[in-house]
Amino acid sequence: MFEDRRGISFTASGGDAVKAFDQVVDAYLSSSPEAGPRLKATFDADPDMAMAHCLKGYFFLLMGSGVLIGRARKAFELANKNAAGVSAREQAHIRALGLWCDDRPVAAGQVWEDILHDHPRDLLAQRLAHHVHFYAGDAGEMRASLERTSNAWAEGDPGYGYILGMRAFALEESGNYAAAEKTGRHAVEVNPDNPWAIHAVAHIMEMQDRSDDGIAWIKGLEPHWVNANNFRYHLWWHRALMHLDQGDSDQVLGMYDEIIWDDESDEYLDLCNDVALLARLEFQGVDVGDRWRPVADKIAERTEDHILSFIDAHFAMALAAAGDGEKVDHLLTTLGDKGGALRSDVGLPLCRAVVAHRRGDFAAAISDLSRIRKDIIHVGGSHAQRDLFEQVLIDATIKSGDLTQARALLEDRIANSPNNPLSRQKLAAVVEAQNS
Ligand SMILES: [Fe+2]
Image (cartoon, rainbow, N blue to C red; front, side):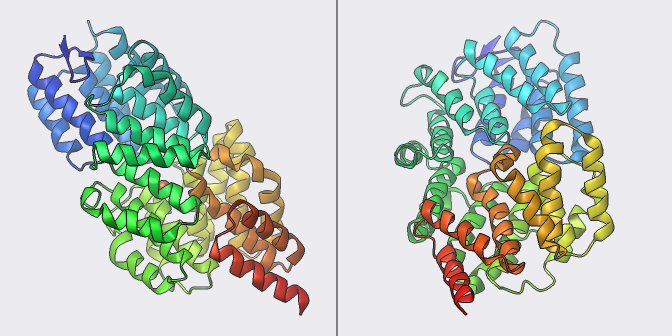
């Protein structure tokens, strides 16, 4: 057994392999494009390292793409094949990978939590648990997960900045903005090469309608995230939202075309960024031209993926916006067939509603969205991302002429977010229409 920099033991042929593995974990936590090459270096040092195969499987699943699940399963098989004599902790990681491959991310999350109970400095288990709690819409568990391990960490520990970055994001999603900002800024002081921590603070500024602060924050730290893997697009996306708040839609369209849209990318988060930004531009009355077409083309082959309802809802929106009716229907049918309580009770009506909105059936969109409004949190993603669905509901009420409900929704929105200029403009327009 060989230890990583945090004292976690690994079964490997030598210390070189564990050192290389540790660098892969570091690359993962810092959203570095070096994760792939470093994983290759780990295999060069030890082709049979069970945890390296396991991590390879994790990476495939983190990409959130149906076609990669087979490759994750292959990695799971190779991890198992090399699992003779590995520790209980390593066996648990492989078990978690298997559960996740079987579309049971919450069960996998419980295994990572069990690992953390005995090995609170297992940074990989912590980050993966953070990921699945996030996509379960479970901010409380995101926070609790980090609180349970906090006593095992101290200032100066390798990777401590990543722990602070995760804690900042969990606090932000829990609505504890003051503590979140303090923690996020601390994380960036400890290690600025931490796009997740930079992102956590950007979220706070987004939620507090501090667009000037947000743009300055993201811009000021650009050297520390601009060379990140595809996650860099999500930081550009956050910056674009802030410019949109300032009414600068020309700049946002320019950012979309020149920076955020990546012809080559099939990553789910990139596609969700694209869809949400185009829709938000349209909600501000901007003509996005034929930009939906290439987004829908990328999604066309993924209508049976159904990795997460959060992703499905974005995919359905893009296909409907591009007028790909058959693809939309196929997505809705296969989603219904896939089953599962969350998909049936929230995912499917959410997808139906965004499609109905696009097709001009505003009454159907309002009916579904009003009924599931309080449950949409369970599809996961952040408050800022899920706000897209609230904007669909508001848009449907305005376009259907239900100005009373539109006004109520906008007033509710302003009560929570009093400085949001876009909500204020929309409310003013609704009030004017009511009085005319
Ligand atoms: Fe975000």
